[in-house]
Image (tube, rainbow over all chains, first blue to last red):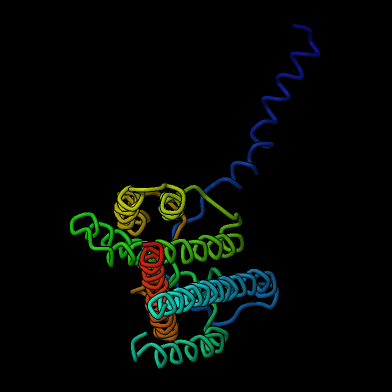
Length: 96
Length: 218
């Protein structure tokens, strides 16, 4: 192994922990919460980033429920229409 | 539809209309901040997801043993609601996690088991739609697996290492947060009962249509 390669290997080994440290730190799992505690006050900068996520979550819930109710009422409407059509066909058949 | 349906629907609508005001005035959480407020819809929808999987499983068991088509109608209706409340849970959860954990998703036991439970409910509906004759019994077997998954989803956070909040967060909630949560739980439970009733009604009407088709053709 040439001297340059040796120096590079030593440098790499020496620097590896400092390069990997932020990655390892970022991957460290957060602590599991055992209870929720109300905050007295939060700085404004803490509040703003959460707002789009909060609004998206509530908008999604309401839209999903609304879409389901609309789909259900349309399906019930279609089945009821089929039912009345068939009942009238049967009545006509009985008369004839 | 039963007499109680319309008054209950009005009460449920009023509860939904009032809930944003209660949630907006709720205190923020010390560590999670404002995004904690997703909890007020996330947790009740997760409970309805689990309740629906249980209703589907119990109705399927009763259908398998008795062959009663009413149980089958309840099971198929509950499976559809499991998918609905499951998707709400699985979308609102990551929106909360993004802010509080710094990631959209983690493959911890609860979230993975919830995804599996949701996919079981989907597979139930797919089997019912495309499975042909006998698919009702095959789907009932799937629903029993879906129900067996529910206790695992609930207790998993207490047994496996995870950053998902433990089940102790609900009993330990302070009063000004807990009454808002129970309001939302009551609201979602009422909504669930109403939607289940409507969905079962649809299945009843469909079976009437099938009987009439047979009568017309016969």
